[in-house]
Image (cartoon, rainbow, N blue to C red):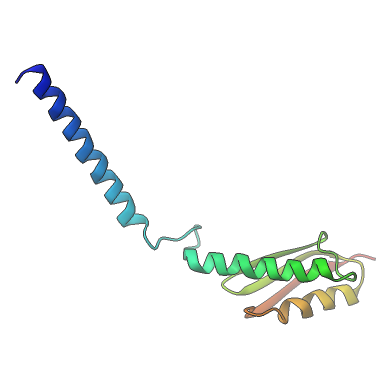
Length: 114
């Protein structure tokens, strides 16, 4: 085999190896989870949307501190954590989260700090 044939064969081999690796990566990652708890991509996006909706409601309300209360969502279940200035703020934050479209349940772990 001469030098030109060797280069062509080497390029062709590299191309097919790269194509095989890309195909294997595509096949194994299609429909895979985004995080370790095996949450599908669509569910992750829906949860992120719910989190954003709840936080937006908090930001619009003068009673609830959007900065002091954290919102996390997993499979439609919203978890509230952080600190509230009063039990009224804590209850209002939970009510607002429950009334958000798409929320399945709310876990209220907000601590009242006087």
